[in-house]
Length: 111
Image (cartoon, rainbow, N blue to C red; front, side):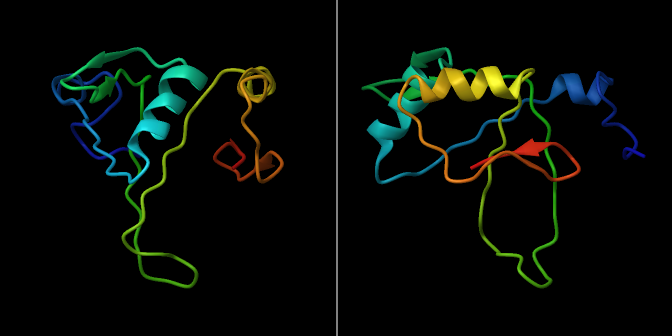
């Protein structure tokens, strides 16, 4: 059950936008990955600070207490329609994966 007011397509969901800022010591390399490997559309906000258009997204809020849960950490999960085609696409651009595809119940995941 979803909390009242944030149903997919509901009025509140449409009226809000999500903006993420990732502070990285390797910002140029990270920007190049999103631009050149993932093919995300972008605009130059100023002086090479690329702003990327993200695909539709969802937000999960999880507790940080408990065994094996790290606090202060962010994860980004990118969704696709065909994981095998996506893997082939990014591998052709030089991406190496650290893990095989794993079914975690909520979806297929690889790192």
